[in-house]
Image 1: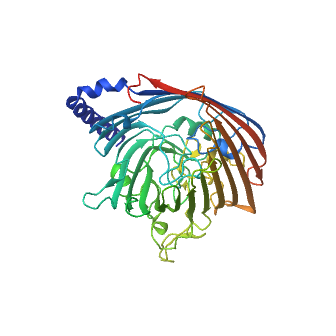
Image 2: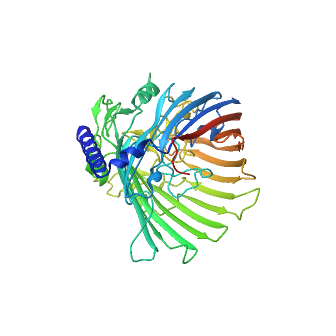
Image 3: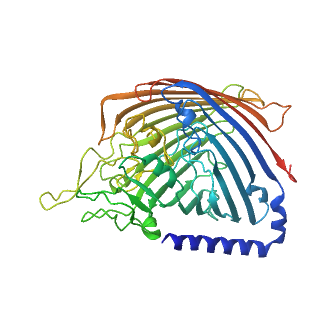
Length: 508
């Protein structure tokens, strides 16, 4: 199945490239024009139980939970929007990273991708950092299904990256969508993380995601826009170690896991240890989104909601929607101090309830509760390289050693309640700043509850200086702080120096 998926990927790539190149030789000659580069060095230092939370998380997997660390990055990229005047557009990018004292060793390819567009349709091939849907990248805690916390997954992705207005609707009805298949690259990390334990881990598993978003409204006609949609993702295939049979018994080693391209797209089939209690093959997760934006000439107000589900009990209304992320974002009239204010509330306490029971002859009542967000009995966790692929406030496996759960991929704290605020501003052309404060309350998990509720506070203060005398040069200094009973107390500083520029720029 994996080989078939790879063959499909290469066939699609060959067809698109052949069609593109045969239709426009001039397109090739433009590939070396308007190319940008960037070089950055980042270092962190501090003391305490863990690195400050916002130094570690929502950095596409390049953060570290250790008190000392850093990363050097060099990138070369051409934005697909450079060809905005053409029907056929092409962009690409490559970024190499050398982390220090992080989960990713001493070298990694952080991004390597090619984007091929025709009108409103894009084929994106490779490994690319992608923002959360309908969220503020700088201030939000991130999406619940697919966030900005883990390293990007190599994939073939067919998408409409921007909303396309349906002709004849005066721009009032618009939609965008995507479908993607890819593969995980954390095999070595999982084996290393599991070394010396009998905990579950996998290798060679595949990735699938899809989404459809609909927007109602035209800001030129009326200031209100309503955007809603469905986002779904799945981990499937590969091989598993220490997979335990449903009814108990010795764990199975190096076994082929279930699922294929079709059961990932339309959930079906079953996992190898489901026995008589068949579930959909693979590790499925998804979110419903809704956002309302009221936009005026110099200010805007947005309200948004994201509700995550791990099975049908929360996908629809079988047990009610008691868990969700709620947010409000205000963009203020231009002033020299504060430009954006954001507040988010996130609760994952309910998870359909504490009990799970399969239908039996003695008790035919099915109770599809105890959803155990981001945990899975086959794939361990919804994670990539130690970082959860959704919202980092459901703490990543990289923290499990701290909680005495070495080698276990499943989150130790997924029943959480979070209050989060974010602020940012640009006092001048040279200076900008942002601040994040998060309060977290946790009861552990239904399977591993804590004896007493744990709390934590996370603070980030950050300022960026872009001198007029150094075009493309920036300096960012940050202070981070943790306290509370969940992740302990820590303080730290971070310094980032970045320089970017153009190669052979022809557009100004």
